[in-house]
Length: 336
View 1 (cartoon, rainbow, N blue to C red):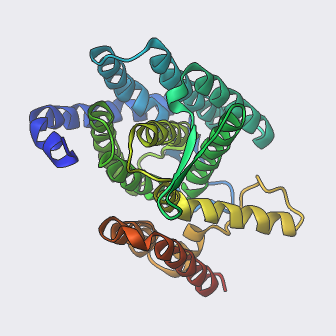
View 2: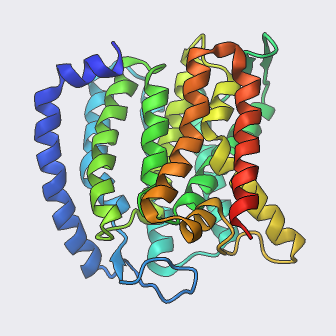
């Protein structure tokens, strides 16, 4: 079953869920205000001008966890996989929520997230990268313990940090997540596909409110999305015979190299690499383009080389080089 067939087969359920999601978002905004989980634009690097609820985690808490549990119950999965998925999603989201509410130091947050991922990985081998399958080199490298655990945790950390750092303009982190979820769904098993579609519906509704500056994802929401994408990507990668690491790298390349560039730039300037600034790709774009153009350029930079690769698999190396050159060109042009 492909993604389009799944959408048509569950059309009525999706319509009902859209109505439910819009209603629940209204209540979640009220809850966020009561708990004072609000993003106040007191920092100079803030782009928005008004205080905005950080409700991402609450939104997913009230909707997606129910769907996640019901799907796992209906399918024949091990208790360990259920616990691994649920533990990582819940506690990484909670850490983000606490950070939104009272701020956690970057080093403490990093250590806690590493600990959460290590527990999740230890509960289920299906969420661990045990081999590296290469399309370009036509071979597979087996990763033995404990290196497979270290490598998997590092990949998870890179993704969760890169998505957090891309959450700088309205709609960007949501758009990037939707692109990733749609692309990985073409390789996913049925139950992952259904959950991806459910989450995409969440994100499309949230996108509307987000670009209107009515609500923000917050660290809790971004952590939820990044953790979910980590787990589903690795699970799909392990279960697929055709998915290779070059394609996964092409998936996450732009937010990843942008994160590494900014970290290195801060280190060279003698600054703490975890302290925020306005040197990210999306900052340069929004300073030189209007909001819609900045969002479109960023998303097309991710999407176009992947679409070319999907039609011409032999061009994987060329697409990686093309994406890197285009990224560097944009940085050079707009950072002046």
